Structures are given as structure tokens and as C-alpha cells.
Amino acid sequence: MQGSLRANKRRFDITSGPLTRCWGFLRREGRLPEATDITRALSFVGSDKLELSEASRTIRFKNQGVEINLGSIGKGYALDCAAALMSVRTALLNAGASSMRAIGSGEHGDGWTIGLRHPRSKFRRLGMLRLRDCALSTSGNEEQFFDYAGRRFSHIIDPRSGWPAEGVTSVSVVASTAALSDALATAFFVGGRRLAEEYCSKNDDILVVMLESDSQVPIVISKSSGCEGLRDF
Image (cartoon, rainbow, N blue to C red):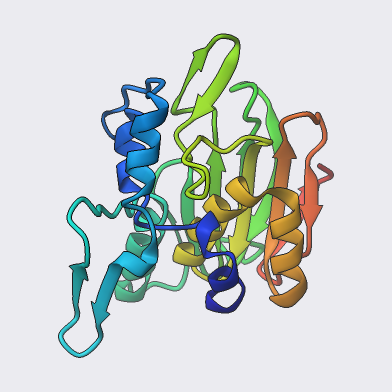
């Protein structure tokens, strides 16, 4: 992940906490902030404002007001830690609908069958996948959002502009670890199809299923050795 995402680090930035707070999503109370509030929040955003010490395993904020938000990767990391501690042949670990980690190939050895819920209807599926020893994460705007003047604002903020990301309704990513799939799902929701295609062209074993806001048919990008589709998207 580090190679390509480092070049596009502004699409995924754990220091976006001030923006999440500014828009009210930290307490699930979405609101439209003033332009001056967004500008102020942006002044605290940027990984260059963090100082990491590998030796002491510490983090220091270089500026007062910097705030990190690990919501976009925390579930995935927790799943990976849990998987590493489990002495089982096969299991499916689930941290809610957005993140899961498959250990082994399921009870019958043919993989874990997973349905991708359609982001525009709780009663439809976007597609079906079968997972083996891999992770699946989904980012979307159907859970945390608010509408204002006919426009939907989601909780996933673009750290470059300070505004909620637009153009994508949902994106699901299959990768080798849940931390990676979590991070990529967020980055691709912000960066859109172009970033997903660019990343997958340079990194193998990543599957992306993306539904753009102006489309009814999802885009399938690249493939994963641990996943197969059971139904056409």
C-alpha cells in the first residue's frame, strides 16, 4: 500500500479528524459548516504534522489542534490482530457490514459466500463474492450522511478540499489484509475510479467493486486470488 498511496496520500489521511469534527460527523450530527470553519480545520490536516518514533513507538503532534481519526482503518486492523491470535482452520470475522476477514476456505472448503448489499436499497444485493484467506471492506454514503438543499453530504471527507467526497456511492475492496482493504476502500471512495485503476495497475491481488454516483452498474477493477464472483455485477 505504501508505494502508490504515498504519492496520493492526500486521499487518505488519518489527520482528517478536525474535518470530521467540523462537519459534525464525529458525533453523528452532520451539519453544513461555515467556509471559515473548513479553512481552519484544513490548516490542521496533513501527515507532515505528525512525528513518529519507531524506536519509542510514540507519536507527537507538531502543531496544536492536530487530531487523528483512525475510523477508516481501525476495524480492519482489529480484525487482522484477532485473526493472528486465533488458532483455527477456518473462520469468518466480521466487524459490522463494512469490514470482514476470512480465515481459510469455509466449512466446506469452497470459500465464504458474501453478499454485497446494494447501497441504494437494503433489499437488493450489488453482487455475490466467495472469499478465501482474504479481507473485504466497503466504504459508502448510505449510513452516515445528511441532505441539504437537495445535495447529499457523506461522512467520508476529502482531505484535500475539506468537503465530503462526491462521485462514488460505494466501493468494496478485497485485499490480503483487512487493514489494507479498509484503507483502500476509503482512499478509492475519495479518489474515485481513476485512483483505483492506477493503484491496481501497480499492485497485484486487489479487487475493487465500485458504484459511481451517476451509474446503475458497478465497475469491477482487477482481481484477487482469494476471491471469485458468484454472480455478474
